[in-house]
Amino acid sequence: MFEYEKKLQYPVNIKNPNPALAKFIISQYGGPDGELGASLRYLSQRFSMPYPELKALLTDIGTEELAHLEMIGAIVHQLTRSMSEADIKKAGYDAYFVDHTAGVYPSAASGTPFTAAYIGVKGDTIADLVEDMAAEQKARVTYDNILRLVDDPDVLDPIRFLREREIVHFQRFGEGLRRTTERLNSRNFYAFNPSFDKPMK
Amino acid sequence: MDLEKLLMQINSGCPAPGAAVGDLPCEAVIGMTYTPMQRSDSAKFEPQEALSRGTLYPGLEMPWFNNFNVTGVPKTPLGELQALDFCIVELGLYLDTHPEDSEALSLYHAFQLAYKQKREEYVKRFGPISKHDITDDDEYSWISDPWPWDASRRRGA
Image (cartoon, rainbow over all chains, first blue to last red; front, side, top):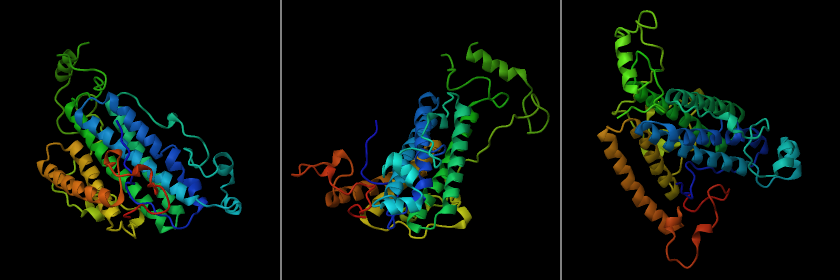
């Protein structure tokens, strides 16, 4: 089960609202490589993972992604607080505002709503872990791109923190895949699917 | 086919792959990602710095255009709690793939102990973090503002 802790993983204290930044940072909430997709991907993949290290890893990283989702939500919320109609128009936040006001809605920067099509659950140990490694890289690049467009240190710091987490997670998934291939035969890693084919007793 | 039989067949089918040279499918190891396992003696940051940088391990820190976090997480009651919590999360991920590393496990216990102590102090002064922290005070303090996403800083921040 999950239990809420009334604190953020990393502080978010944005002094100056700026809806122009929220317009694209929302993509890490509900976009193709965002934190909602990340948490659902890992927390769903874990059910078919065959080895204890992998069950733990997918559970722990999936849970951390929920904390990241909350951080992104906090950033978007604080960037869009106390906006006037003039602020909304000036920042080009009007399209989002019409549909969601100052609510936080899981969508991509382009406005496309979140979809489970962003994630993969193949039910094969190697395929799922390779997907996870790619997902961490794509999220890292999204944060790189956000860093290019932001100049407020209150926003930059939590974004840099989140970007670094992608790098650590990539390493851990790589280690998880290594633990997997060590159990398999290098003559044929693909002879069977450890997530589905269980050795007979 | 039964898996045991399949494994025996794989083991007898091809000559043993020696060095990673030669032609597939028989003489070479097939392409596979290779991630070096992180070493158990990796250097570590202090908790507060680890949280600010987003990792406990200097060896895993790869900042974009070499820009580091400027402000850092303040050493407030909440900041200290977040830092210790972060170290437990980070070291926990390491232990997921290195469960046999007894040195890392002792460090994990040390972080847990420090966290438990800080958390108790924090809850006493600033209110509950989880619903299990609600004590027999008069008020149901769980609902008290600010919530973590609010722009007004959480107490102890």
